[in-house]
Length: 479
Image: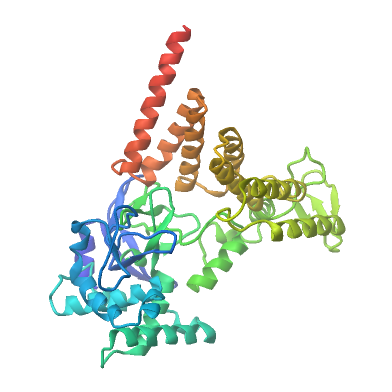
């Protein structure tokens, strides 16, 4: 801990223990919006390889890949990435001893654990260096929550630990410790995403894992390649706790609390969560996950009547019967059960027809700010883009923006990315004026969450300049 504190001191950070949270990261200086608070390379990481798509084990790129000729499991895209051989050499030896069928069935979680133990071994033997922010002691200090895991999950971790032991074949390996480390990974590993928040792999970042959760965070965790980058999304004064969000925050307090309890085993007490049961929280929950008013012109939210016979609008007082809601909900469930989960193996026109039918019923049932309705619009947006129906795609993208503004509070990357999508579609359709507006809104958010030096942001800034130049040219031509 002393070594870690000294390393963090130079970055304007310190670790303190809080009674209800344990280790927590605090600032020792002010941080401005967009400023990098901490950047950390993964202690271990693995790509999300699948039969459909494989990725380089080092940089997660998916092009120019060559498979390791020995184990036939790992891919590299270039000689520079293959230079990480020291770690893979040991993993390769272990995997190559397995029968081919069993080797191909090794999951990313098993590989992550194998790499964890192999990296620890190489650091202990001084073959690869360790540092204050890069050593196994930081992994040992992570919380496992073993006492809060159900028996079924414990059995699964034990089985996975036995498989790791079988692959490594180390005589003195501690299977109980491996099982505990699997629990640590479940609570502390992060999904590595690209700049547009598409999942690429999984990584363990022990220092970043010290940062606690808030449903109203002052920072955001994103990735540049495999590097985890935490940036301030608002002014953070000296002595404040650094907070990120662990979960999808678009949901009612009850939904968020349930997700946090199930995966991370704690109850959030952030400013947003302590309002549970208060009027503002009830209104938010009823809007995001509740029903709409019977009057289509009314934007009020519905609350169940005390006698349980219906739902009353808190704005105009109209009542919707329980039977009416139950009937629409039943029709909606029937349609949703028939709708394809993925469009990869189905007809796009069939998919769009099915989701439009779902949208029609959802509009009758749910509040206009419903998350369920937003998710249907997202699916229709995606399918329309696959069909290259840009007008339809833009219409659905614009429908999602007001809901995004409501559910992704403050400076949120998902809102910035939705403005970016909107701008790209407007550009394709020749609507230069609105392209400039959308891309400007995207840049205002994403320059804070993403910085300005990544290829993605350089491309976005260039697009905005091109759109401004074209808009200026059009204006001068009209004059």
